[in-house]
Image (cartoon, rainbow, N blue to C red; front, top):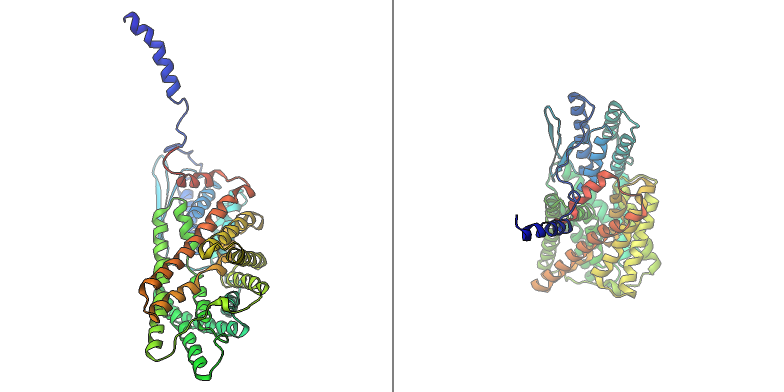
Length: 471
């Protein structure tokens, strides 16, 4: 070695120490977990419990990130940490990495229904297992009890709740008491009709078409009666009748869940849920468009009345927001003790929406985003004290904000004025409102994280999927 090379040696070593990191990668890659103390048969039983619980959670509308974290916590309660979960829109794959022989099971998700009381019970089961309050046998028995238990309310109460929800939408949109009554009766008729069709196995897309078509038929009947008997146009505005029914039909779509899946790093499931939401919304559009076209051909004079021309007190509109949220939570079988909270959140959402539109002049998208952001903050802050999933409060809370009137107005412009471009633009604006609601709720729940306790290791493990590729 020459004197020059020996002199450069220490310099190069110091340069390498400055440039190279000393610790391991910021994001651990393929870290090997600890082997559980369970036998292979016991781990198979744990895996069966995990799959059944995850199936029920996804079926009741929970976001994939929340379900994945819950299932990892459930497995950890029995000492199983070497677990891999892969959830798609229609299936769950779970695998335990054993040194001798890995165990893998698959479960197909076949049922989807909004059942928030059952969803809350499932999360309670996970918490009990994670606290080691239940043995494996007890956990399986309790899961059987949760899945086989009847709904907390009778089906006619659900139908009545949907009618009350439609009446609240009519009042929130500046309709009168008569409009609220007609909207409630129309929605009750739609619910009973669609329930019969569901029993006969009609696909959900066609149920949306028929539901929107029935609401539009009632609106056309109101238009015909107004022209025939010379009633005041403000007596029974058809746009509000149709919009009330559309909001009820929109409320069952997994709008918030699809946005949370996309943001949390589950693009496949998010894409499937988004496609489902778009497809079923198209069903509403088709139902409205076909009936409006038939009404025009029948000579019924199509008109539309702007809600701003009516005069409903702001207090009534805010109370209507609470009625909408509470009614939908009741129709979704939410726990009775949670419904009053949801009513309050709905009132706040309606108040913030009116504030954004009338005072701040943010426009439909901006005011909807602001109201949804507030709902997300409240849902994130109250979910832990109430022991209720975020989804229950947030989805019910944004129900008064769904763009039913915007969808009807878009189809009216397409059919009556033959303005395809303008109607399409308004339809895109309606989808913009829906995206603003989903984004606002998701951001609000994220910002509310400091309001509740720190995430556990399983939630942090799932959250890392959304952090991007750079550490």
